[in-house]
Length: 106
Ligand code: FES
Image 1 (cartoon, rainbow, N blue to C red):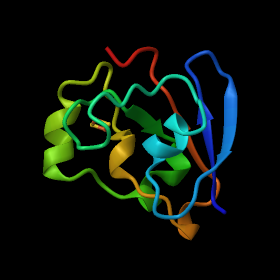
Image 2: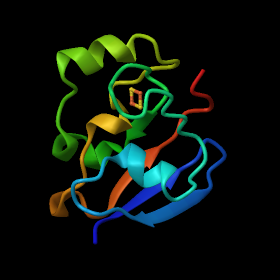
Image 3: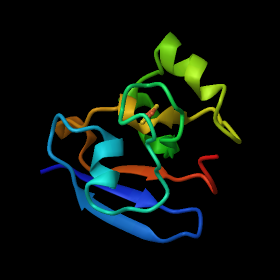
């Protein structure tokens, strides 16, 4: 099963097995990883699942859709590799993915 490493703002690493087809957001919420609120439950309508994709993985996770880009405008401290984690589905190609979590989702 693909592994995803979530690094909190404080530098704590959480390595989680995320089944292919689940989103990065679901992988965090279902495994108790702190730092992703996901208020809208994955509908790309809240921007509280903001993560920073590690530079080494940014090409593999692809670009945000225009809808996701619009929602990212509501996130804090957006960076070039910012994504909404409900919009990235895990696949075998993303095994080993590393994402960092922002200081706050609000
Ligand atoms: S969970 Fe709401 S935008 Fe991702």
